[in-house]
Amino acid sequence: MLFCEDVELMLQDYLDGYLLPSQREVLEGHMRGCRSCRALLGSLTRLDGRLEGIGDVEVPEGLSRSILAALPAQAYGPSPLRRWLIAGLAPALAFVLVAAGFLFTGRFALHNLVADRVVDLFISAPQAASVAVVGDFNSWDPRRTRMIRSNHEGRWTARLKLPPGVHQYGFVIDGSTWVPDPGAKTTLADGFGGRNSVIIIDS
Amino acid sequence: MATTAEKTPLEDAQVVRQVLRGRRDAFSVLVERYQKPIFNFVYRFYGNYELAQELTQETFLRCYQFLKSYDPERKFSTWLYKVAKNLCVDELKRQRSAREVRLDDALPAIDARDVAGAVDRNQQVQCIRREEDFRLLEALQELPPAARTVLLLHYFQGLSYQEIGETLGLPVSTIKIRIFRAKKLLLDKWRETFLPPGG
Image (cartoon, rainbow over all chains, first blue to last red; front, side):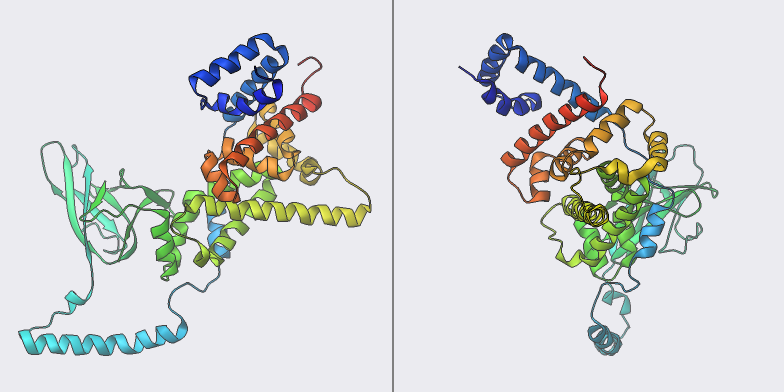
């Protein structure tokens, strides 16, 4: 036997579909004989529909720009003392390592000190005659990183080595059409009405 | 499509880590990703377009300033909503105390429409376009802040009970009851104020 007060506690679960079949049966049994609980359920169902049907409003133009402009100029990162130590010690350490590398192997190996990560990029462009990768890592120059057509379905690939950090990039099809990476999870406005893709390389 | 030799999905926590390592520009990824949900949350909380703009900006500013206190084991979005919700409630208190000083009288618990003003109402109508939705949102803005918050987070921002619980620091069972009671309150408010007799 259910009382109206008990029904109220069960209604949200009922609306969410969380009740067990046996509980649902008891609740529906009560509602068949109780006009006020039936009316409440009807109203709540309509309200749910209304609330879920209200769309989002668009953000004001330039909101992200004003947010970013309002951020403190000071970036996070090492403290000034640590930064000074790094700035002073890192070149010295690099010199020692490179000199040691030269002594042992007879050649310089500075590039080994930078932990770049391998990134494979690909895009499907069956009609394209050429595709290039452009980004902050190659000065957005389409001549510098050309992609290779890897199969007859029009898949173009490129393998890059990128340092840790946040990189913005895109593709240039046939030397003139700039497009973001359709598979990128994040894009940012490029400042020219288009979008850049974003990739983060963890160190 | 981009893949890396070792999988590196663009998780919020990774972006936060980059910002904390000194990549200030990486914060723009978080702004792009969350400006719309946060703006909509604040806008619906108050029904005031300009105030929503200000508080959204303030939310991201606080977020940046206190980024070190973010626990990467938790969802970034729930942490961000918590910042936004606290700012909304603080602003409400500030407005209420300012009006109490001015009027030296007891006031209705919340009347965001007074704050929004007549000019803003026109803006709201332009933005929402559907009068019925607008009326429902007005009723929502008259609810106590706690009721408003849970409804907004659940119905508009799509947070689960669990996520709302994490945002507000409350157990899921409490959230469920709050949502139900908030809906009943909203129903009463909506009916008494806006629906035609017998509607």
